[in-house]
Structures are given as structure tokens and as C-alpha cells.
Image 1 (cartoon, one colour):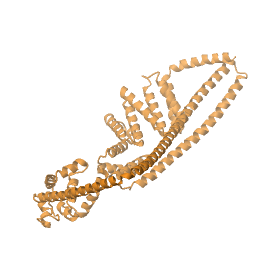
Image 2 (image 1 turned 60 degrees about the horizontal axis):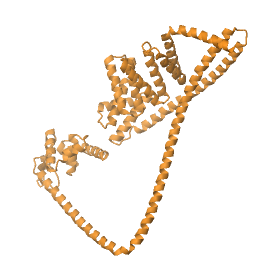
Image 3 (image 1 turned 90 degrees about the horizontal axis):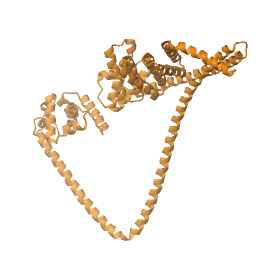
Image 4 (image 1 turned 60 degrees about the vertical axis):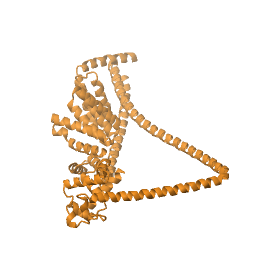
Length: 486
């Protein structure tokens, strides 16, 4: 009887599949729409299953079903991103990007580039984020997509560009900085958190300020709290759904067994049994997919455990090395006791070392005297120059008045002439400073030279036709740059 049921079910299913082959496109459409529906409802595990089912069926008709394939892959990547499996999401979007370049699917390439931009920003791969953002921006400029599709693209490009400049140590213009501050006040929590994070990193790297750090921490906590709440809600929904489906499957099994033993014909009973078995197979596939995700999580935890074991082994090796060093120290003490008879030789060597140290001190004193003499000669040479003789320094023999050095280097030509005199008198000090720190501008190098000569802040302000507060702020900013460079 069982063989008869199975044979009948196979015949009926073969006839159904023969009719369904004529409508492959409609089947793909139904599968994809079901995946989208589950995705919107928050049933992520079932959504992944239907996205994968759509992509798998597209392989048999690559020419007719290429559109459904990349849409299913993008939907699956978005689900992975929501579940915080960023590596899987990146793999899916990169696969779409490669296929889109091969078959010239501009829309797929544009969407995949934007998604990869967000993933790279979240993983702090700022150079990759900038390249993907620029790729999407160029594609949108070339194709003129509608605003409904390009909504948020400019924000992603601003974030990626700012992050790229931050990672490369490049200067950020006031316009870009203002745009990022506007994004930091956005209504979108994810966008606001990312913008505040970049502003905090930029301030700590440039000036050491932390004006946006507290806001970033609050938004980060709120963002992850919402993400955790969504994960919790999704888990509860999936749990309830699995329980309901389990009960439904159990009820279906009971109904199938009951109907198979009642007055229905053998053919109808066999077909119902085959259909129930087919549904159970799909449920097993979905449960298998969930188990695979759990296994991946266990694998990650095992890797962390292995890393902790490696750290423990390294600590044990360090303890063994310390024990070996202690044994060597004991041997050294014993050798010092054995060589105690050679005390006179050691005293003689000590006296010779003292004599050498005294000679070394004399040489160092002579070197300091030569350095002082060289500095005086260089200063005298500077004071014989056109701008140097008007510098209001303490050792300038000309002692210029306030009227003489007012607006002395206020123009760019005077600044260039002053830097040339400094290079000539102090062995290319200005140009060497520019090479060591390329981020310094000509004005920064001029102020560094003036600070190096020991000129007062008020005199520098008079020479450059600036306010005293401006000179003080520039001094602090240059000191911060030099400390960051060292």
C-alpha cells in the first residue's frame, strides 16, 4: 500500500511540475514577493530561506531571471546586515557588484555600491567606504535615477568622504565639516550616530577636544539598545512562530493520518501524504538553516576560547623565562663572589672610567660653547639682513622701534623673504620644518620661526598685523600639531 501511495504521489507531482515549468517567471515572482513580505513582517529566517530559494531557481534560467537573482541577493544581504552578520552581507553585495559589472546592470551596481558603503562605514573600513560611495555617486550622475532611489545617497557620500579624509590625515574644509554637523543633528538615529562618531574622532585627532564625544556615546547606547530590542522582539516572534508551526505541523500530520484511514480514495490519500511530506521537507530546510546560523555562532565562540588559551600559554612561557632569568641572576652573583679577589683591578678600571667621564664632560662643555658661539654668529648674520635687522629680539644690536617693525611681514612677499633669510642663516631651518611636517602652511612655518627666535606675542601681532589673541591661538594649535607629530 505504501508503494502505491508513493507511486501515485510521484505521478501527480510530475504532472504539476510539468505545468509549472511553463510559468517559471511567475513562480520566481511569487517566491520573491513572499520573501519581501516576510522581510517586511520581521520574519528574517523565513525571508532568507525564500531569498535563497529565489536565487537558486534563477540559476536554471540566468538570462530570463537575472533581475530576480540580484534583487534576491540584495534582499538576503540586507537581512544579514540586520542580523549583524556583516561578513555574509558584504559577500552577497560584492557578488551582486561583480555580476552587475559583467552584465551591465547599472541599477544593481548602484544599489550594491550604496549598501557596501554603509557596511564599510560600520566596519570602519573608510577607504573602501569612500570608493563605493564615489562609485554610486558617479553611477547616479550618469544615469539620472529618480529621487526616490537616490534618497540618502548624498549623506552617505559626505560620511564616506569625511571618513576617508580622517583616515588619511587630510584637511577637512569648513563646508564638509558643516555638512557633517547637520548630519549629526539628523532625525535618523543610525545616521546621527555615525556622524557623531566621525566628528568625535576628528576632534580628538586634530585638537584633542571632546565636545561631541558625550553625544556620540549617548546615541551609540540608544542605537544598540534599539538594535537589541529589535533582535529580542524578532527572536520572540520567531519563537512563537516556530511553536505555532510546530503545532500546525503536528495537527497536519494527525489530519493526514486520520484522512488516510478514512473513506477517501487511495489516490487522494497518497497525494495528501506526499504534499504533507513536501511541506515537512521545506520546514526541515528552514530549521537546518537556523541550525547552521547557531553553529556559526558556536564556531566564533570556540575561536575566542582558542585565542584565550593561546594567551594563557604565552603567559606561562613568560613565567618560565622569568624563572630562567632569576637562575641566571643567581649565577651572576656567584661569579661576582668568585671575582672578588680582583678588586684592585676593578678600582683601577673605575679610576680610568672616571678620567674618561671627566674628559667626556670637558668635550661636552666645549661642544656647548661652540653651539652658543655658532648661534650668536647665525643671529648676527640674521641681523645683517633686510628683515632681520628690524626684528624686535633682545640681542638685536640695532634695537628697532615699534614703528620700524610694525607690518614688517604682513604681506606674502615679506613672509617669503623672511623664510629665505631664516633658511640662509639657520641651515634651511624653515624648509626642513616644512618637509618634516607637510601639513604646515607657509603662515604656520613663519610663526614657528618667530616663536623660535623668542619674540613676544605682542611684537609678533604688530609684525603680522594681527590680534594678540590670534597669535596665542595659533601658538596653541602649532604646539598641538607638533605634539601629535612626535
